[in-house]
Length: 111
Length: 113
Image (cartoon, rainbow over all chains, first blue to last red; front, side):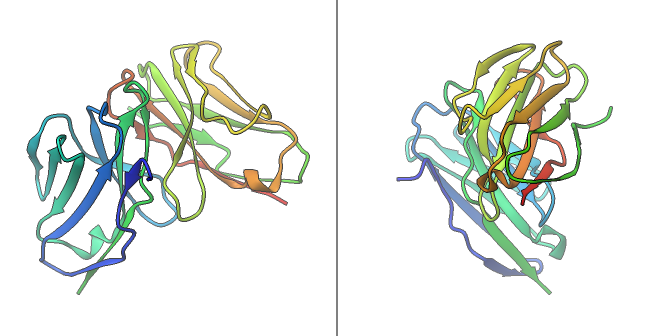
């Protein structure tokens, strides 16, 4: 079992729709969770982080965390073509210092 | 202020050569991290510094990889006797402290011929 699992996609959604990206993790000790966006040929860009169970909203983005189920998700409302990228889920592991990344989900927002 | 700065952006080396990759973190960031990203994969942890102390080097793939941060600011990742499998993007990230959000530099794309 991989430490962090994401559906590689591509996930295709029409412009204006809600994109839902999911992630499961194996380290029950993880307390902090991060979502990064990575455009092709670019470096990861932090877009959301969440520490507590429940939802956290920031603009069009909502992160959801369920530690009991070891599940974290990212919702993108009113998806735009500029949201087309790979989204990387990364819990802090190893005692809370290093990020362990999934392989990422490729999102395509179609006109 | 400025973000994380990495140099060079691209590096081509022949197999067997030594290379050195530089990272200048965000000013005031105590923690510095190196990651390696292969094509189509997520970044993989290499090593972690808090100030000048290297607290975790569990991700370094072999003893050919060496990292330092002597004054607690700029860090250098050195790879000796490079091999083709070392070809990847090397990402540096920094954060205010160990558990805080990490911000990445643009990376160094290393190609070993």
